[in-house]
Structures are given as structure tokens and as C-alpha cells.
Length: 140
Image (cartoon, rainbow, N blue to C red; front, side, top):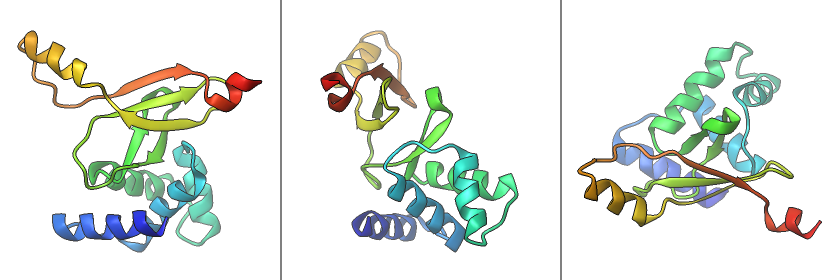
């Protein structure tokens, strides 16, 4: 977690962004969770720690983190996860376990970009989410 926070601070400094206390704490909450969290789950933690109880507090912090490349929104779950590769340009692919709900971040396949290029299509944003079973749930 310490390395991820150090990377977040460096990324924000390089991009001229302010990692305010509520934004930093929101990132820490996502990093501590090791799972996708809904905005209201994050808000409950922020509220318990004195950062505020109004939904915009969480939504603004989460929006900042997503825009800064420090977190991702998992559309299927309507939830957020800390980015596993902050500061690096990448197209994340999320593997969502139907058994336990864990989310792992991987990289979208280069074949997708080749297919798009062959069709003359320029990809601007990739949201790739797949569902299946994690190793632990497969063993059950």
C-alpha cells in the first residue's frame, strides 16, 4: 500500500493535481479493501473518519481518482477499485468472480487493438469486464 501511495503522490505531482486529504484517504480505503467498493461503502468509511457524510464527498474523490488514473470504475458492479498500475498507460481488463465477487485487474489483449485498427477504428477508452470463477471458487 505504501508503494501505491508513493506512486499516487508522484503521479499527481507530475500531472499538477492535488491529492487532498479526502482524496488520499479514499485511495487508501480502496487499497485496503482489496476488492471493488461502491461509492456508499466508501462514503460510510469517510464519514466514520470525519470526512463528511454527503454523497458528493465520495463521488468527487472517486471521480478525481478515476480521472487521475489511480482508480477504475467497474461498470458491471457499479463499484470502484484501486488501479494496480497507476501512472502507466494501460487498458485494464477486470475479471469478476461470480462466486465470491472479487475483482482482479489484468490487461486488455492486444488482439482487441489489432482488430480495431484493421476495421479503421481508433479505441479511445476500453472497459473490458469478464465474469467467471477465481481459483479459490473453482476449488470448491
